[in-house]
Length: 116
Image (cartoon, rainbow, N blue to C red; front, side, top):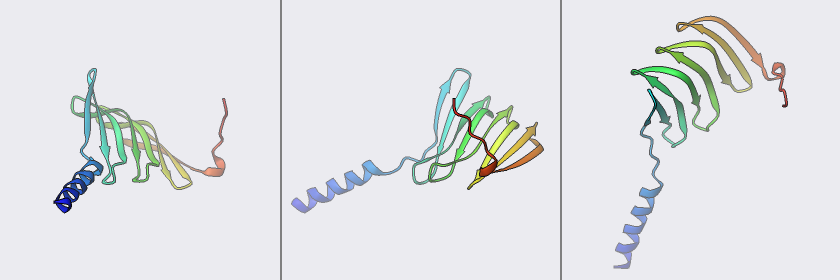
């Protein structure tokens, strides 16, 4: 009997710690805020949809939670400045209607931090 109770308790405990990796969608005015997860439960991407198209600011993260991309979509297309992090390198990419029009690579030594 004790073994059965212990087994049931162990299974229940494992179920409590299981990672929920299903996307989360919530209505925010006319937009739908989306959050997607990696298999380990950390956030993979967050952003918005408008009329079933990517819209507004999006952030993307690796499985360890480090930011790997940031930018915005307009009517489902990349638009404006996007930033991509690769280790100690930062890539700045300008988009117009989902087309790359300019790319600038930054090294950590070139990035200036301004304290406010």
